[in-house]
Length: 205
Image 1: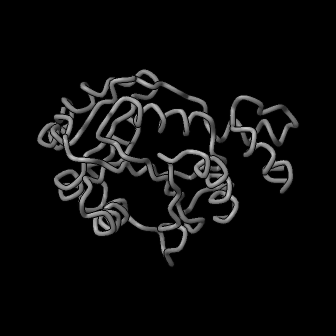
Image 2: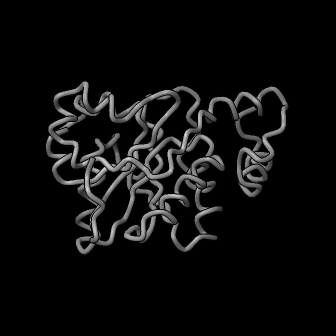
């Protein structure tokens, strides 16, 4: 695994955020708390052009993230991907942030489920050469075993930072959307301001 950098970092947290959940914000806060080099976490919602079923509009997902990020000086939302005229590759997004913040090291988060496929990503070698990755252990995965089994990941293991706090959460946005459709409460699953926004705009019904 990679060494922890002393250079100040900005961590990019990409995702559908459909809707944003307490677990997303809890994860971001734990990264800020545990790694002193992390100056802020920038949430980057994917464009609705991304081929995903049930993905509501860019505007609603961006607005929901803003409601929470506006209250935390360490959190920010970026419209970079939703303003693009096509879905961006991870390396394109991270390179754009590096150009915007040249004095920082840019890192990003991904789950151990995605780690298994990272060698298939666009410009994977360049991605791992230029950017650090905070890997979050999901379910029964072992990050060490995933890396050891894959020669590409083994060669680039210095790029991965396994989070000190092994945050395991299987709470999914799909589950929350289904609760809303079935008229069940999502209290404690998402921030109150996001629950209010969903109700006000009659989302996910």
